[in-house]
Image 1 (cartoon, rainbow, N blue to C red):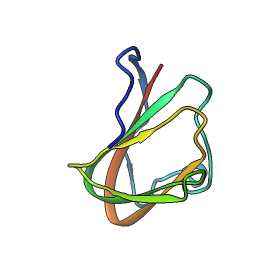
Image 2 (cartoon, helix red, strand yellow):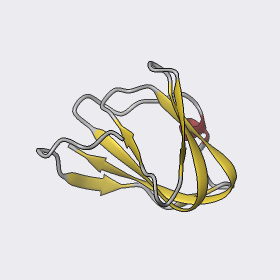
Image 3 (tube, rainbow, N blue to C red):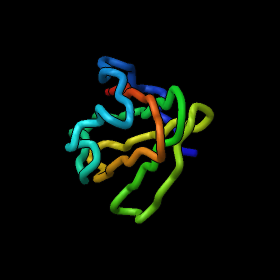
Image 4 (cartoon, one colour):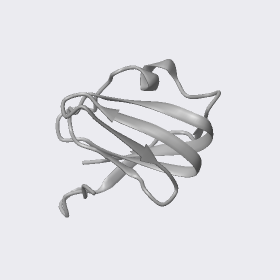
Length: 90
C-alpha cells in the first residue's frame, strides 16, 4: 500500500459523501494539483478507486484507505451503500 511522504501535512478535507451525493466530477477521471496528495477515507461500505495511468483498481473500505498521488488521473465508484471523505495534503 502506498504511503504519504513524511514531509506533507493535511490542510483540507471534503464533505462526507454517500452513494447518492458523490459529485459527478469524482466519478469521472480527475486529478489533484501538483504537490497535492489525497487520502480517501471510507467510513462504511466499499468504494472502487481507479488509477488511470497504472490501470489499477482497488476496492477501498474502512480498513483500506486510498492514497492519491499528485496529478494522478483517477476516479471512484460506489459499490453499494458507502460513506467517505477525502483529505488533502501538501
